[in-house]
Amino acid sequence: TAVQPSDAAGSTQEVLQRVFGYDAFRAGQREIIEHLVGGGDALVLMPTGGGKSLCYQIPALVRRGTGVVISPLIALMQDQVDALRALGVRAGFLNSTQDSGERRATEGAFLAGELDLLYLAPERLRVEATVRLFDRGEISLFAIDEAHCVAQWGHDFRPDYLLLSMLHERWPAVPRVALTATATPETHREITARLGLAGAHHHVADFDRPNIQYRIVAKKEPKAQLLDLLRTEHTGDAGIVYCLSRASVEKIAEFLVGQGIPALPYHAGLDARVRAENQARFLREDGIVMVATIAFGMGIDKPDVRFVAHLDLPKSVEGYYQETGRAGRDGLPSTAWLAYGLQDVVQQRRLIDSSPGDAAHRRRLGTHLDAMLALCETVECRRVGLLAYFGQRGAPPCGNCDTCLTPPESWDGTVAAQKLLSAVLRLDRERHQRFGAGHIIDILLGRRTPRVEQQQHDGLTVFGVGADLRELEWRGVVRQLLAQGLLAVQGEHGTLALTPSSADVLRGDRAVALRREPERPARSSVRAER
Ligand code: ADP
Ligand code: ZN
Image 1 (cartoon, protein in one colour):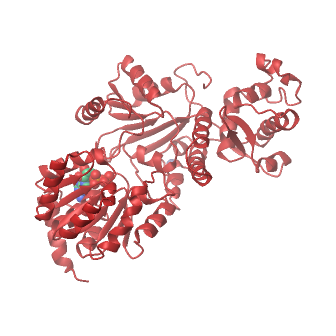
Image 2 (cartoon, helix red, strand yellow):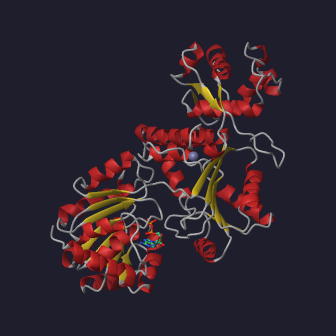
Image 3 (cartoon, helix red, strand yellow):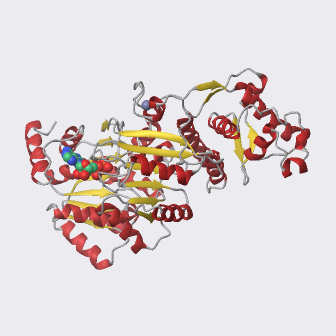
């Protein structure tokens, strides 16, 4: 190779200390940096907070020319550039938020060789002027941040990322580094293929975040459950509460404030000024609880977030991992807590059914949701499940997740499943009717509700056959059958339907093991989930 390893090591180490003020590289950084300094390509899969930025920033400083960083996070560019400038690094950015004067000034600095780093939104590559600009300047490397955006399989595909295959075609001598915190084997393969990185140095970091305690609980009374978590374990701590909708963000933030907890809302519907202000307070002040949609958090570098709570089910394991990964960047014990219920599954299925895009796209979304449900309903270590999803197999149980700490009993739910599935089957086959979980459970419990009487469902043979379980337990059965693909939920009203696998259970060819919810001491009266 062209690099003198000792020289490169010396200068990169020196830059690490002089510019960034750090004593030592973190795992993987040195190898990646030296490989790039030597002119090679790299693909870096490293969890959020792992230290990806230095992997391209240091080579950009060591090599001649400007490091061009492609990033979809336009809103963060100003901050990133400001932070670099504060360290004495010559940085600039080009994106659609600038006026032409600012853009020309940045382009001038680039052409004069006065920029170490240039941040660029991917759509700028559509513009021929950008390509000409690159031809006239000197580029030390291309860094492709959030590289999973190139993967159609993934959860965050951006068509403009497909333009990035041109980088290597037009400037074959410029080394490239693609970086992402998403590391499923599928995404890894797709990034490699689309960006032509088969010959690159692949760094796949350990994705385990041992200081994060993963807990997933059944959603009963979400506000009370959240309050309980904050009061008993996280008094005065900074944290993030994720909600699916803007309305629930507002509602929960208001609720927490009413309970004396300093909470702020964040979602895309808020005024940009309010959003910026709330984000700044979260970063600057101690103990703020940010109640947010997933619009919040990308690129937020706050080390002491002590908990991330989800009040709604994330759409994918990738999303869950990224969002929970914002907790405990400082390495201190932190909590990732998720409350999820049947309603979440119904809601997510509805979103998928009505999502734009073709059938293949909807199928992909369905697969993502199924994996998330499987993680929720597993009787095994959550961390083992999470890591296996990212291709890290064979980890031992972690001892620091809810299923390790309070092993859920599993029970033979075959008969219960048969009762439930046959109720669904009878209504469907005999009366061509489909109903949501609530009504089916009423039938199983033998409840003569107005609807049951009106439909004369008290005359069904399955009426009352499920009185041995409580409503809460039936909801658990439905959830887990959904997670195991033995039941499906459909349409606007979340009606239940059989799947091809349901027949195996009904015939008695397949046993169904279910997870019994560990009974937690109830602080507040536990009402049925709504
Ligand atoms: P990522 O992009 O992978 O999410 P960052 O590059 O933002 O992570 O790094 C996360 C934090 O770790 C930042 O505050 C960064 O300054 C810090 N960091 C990165 N590398 C080192 C290192 N070698 N020593 C100490 N701190 C580091
Ligand atoms: Zn565990």
